[in-house]
Length: 310
Image (cartoon, rainbow, N blue to C red; front, side, top):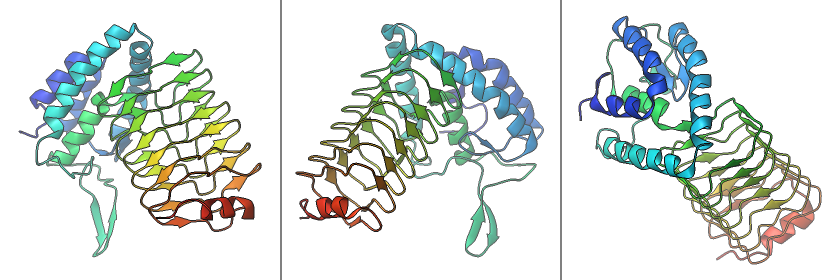
């Protein structure tokens, strides 16, 4: 595959996201001026790219909301076409294991920082991946959603980005498949239903908050699940969940008794400093991997230790 700013993959993505055409023309001008620097997903490494993202992100969120609120057949058709484009791109060997964004900047022999260069000459596979994610990830990043949203059973091949979104009404996302570039960190949810959903890659709900019920029963996390400092103000249902590469609930706050009945915890899991106001249920839970239970209520620690540790 040719990794250049005008690769055919971008034509395909613009065809699926016609609203983004003016932004993509601006991007072309910035590249020609050597000012284009997406240093990481949705992050600009210089002033010009940051300004572009400040305008692009809300426009993308508005377009995504319109798509997710449209008749299900239209969303399914869009996802099907996007999946074909994404699969063709991600199957390229040069993309496997590539970090999205401009090349990191080396500070010392063992220290690297996200690229903040004001000008960049070469267009790399990592930059191409970051640009594909701009158009390929469905995103409501930083958006306020006031109406109920039903996306149950949908597939998001690259991912769904709800980072810092505020969902003021119930979200139905049961049996969804979320691709490897999903991000739910710092989001605010009303009632959220993720039952039987499948999360690929590292999935973050860090510092997010659930004002209503958080339903994750029988969800499957194929990568590490981050729930660091997540707040659960109402019922938290995680029975039968499968954490296949560990999880972290460090500093999480459970206002009611979370239900981990029958959950499976592979990999390294941690509940350090989590607050359990009404205890927790771990009957039938299994911990094939290591688990850290430091500084949590004794009753919860005992419940974890009493679970199966094969």
